[in-house]
Length: 479
Length: 93
Image (cartoon, rainbow over the protein chains, first blue to last red):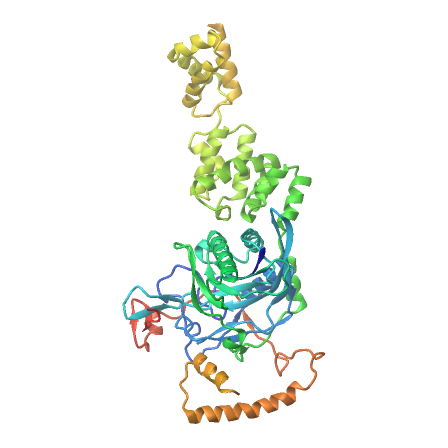
């Protein structure tokens, strides 16, 4: 019998705000234990939450990016569970009227395009961090992460393979980064994923027993977990190797196995009820319109503009729209240098390769696009040679404040037009390479390259290659 | 309310109820369930959800970070702390 896997995802994304969702504590990662904590976020009695407007802005924006309906009156609710990482013994989240509902995300896989329905996006607070390895008999609690704002994006069970899940997560990351609402770096824990999975005979409309794997934080791990769980479910159904139960499981990436953690909670177990400390958030027309007006150009729209209006090749445009950081740098550089083709060429040939060498993601690009445009202009008009342009670009990665023209001047990278100097260098190089000269004269054209290289080195790259070549050949021919 | 539901709620709320308390709670909820049955009989399918009894909305604050408390101030009343952490009985084996 053939089976199909039915997968729904709950994706938690940490929003890129400065402060927490219900208090003004710093939301930035990396402080010492409990340094970003106040009486409100560590659950002291009598403290009241106040909503961070930017969290609602970002919740709405994410909803609009995923084609959701925005609930113009959205409310917060309490979700009860007792664990030391949750100081209030409840999480403030949204259950009855989440900020965004009923959206879609289009994905593309080897099987073509497919729409994944979004059930809802809700805003909520993160929990704290528990450290179990400092002492044997106690658990250490750090509330810095408590109340850091999250959105949870809940899909309908429309995904059916690891490939689709990967495409869906990549698409979510791209859209949320374009909207600048979140970093979405799974490796930093700013995007985490719960995978709900069941298996059923192909064509059946009945869902099988569902298991959930929580807090997956790499796409590779998610893919392996889906493959493992699918095989485990099919084995249980066909061979009776175990009785499948609805439960929460933990994925162990090192062992390549999932393990039962606890019986799956149902919504009733959390005893959701409206938070009496938070009044409804009412989104009026002005607020709604301001968020809609701030939506970015989508990757597909940029692609169309780059190919149709700027004349870039399909390949170049596809490379650039992979990341909003690449697009912004390219557009700023193009505005200064005036050549879309040159700007794209520098982005793809030089910048993307430097990012890869430095093991940086495209979104970590820290080059000022305007400065890049100035550099490209210097190379285009022959003020700086391409090789020295690359050196300047590398320096710009170290120091974003570098002004290319000043840096070129200071480091002797300005191209020389002094033909007297070039002739002098050529003469010295010819004297130093008699064998190469003889070989060239004997018909080995490539032999000239070693003399050419010696000259270019002596001139520190500050010479138009064509001018140098012409003078070099003329000088040898006259000998 | 049946005893199994009560047992589950007892577990979720981490309570240990006496037999007397269980009977009292069961009787209370049986009574409330009758009240709820009356309310549930009303057709509200065409009624807009009311989120608050007053026409009131939340205030929001701007996204500005500040840190008015030190770790020491916050942990003054804590029964056990270590290196800036709160300490609680171990929750994993």
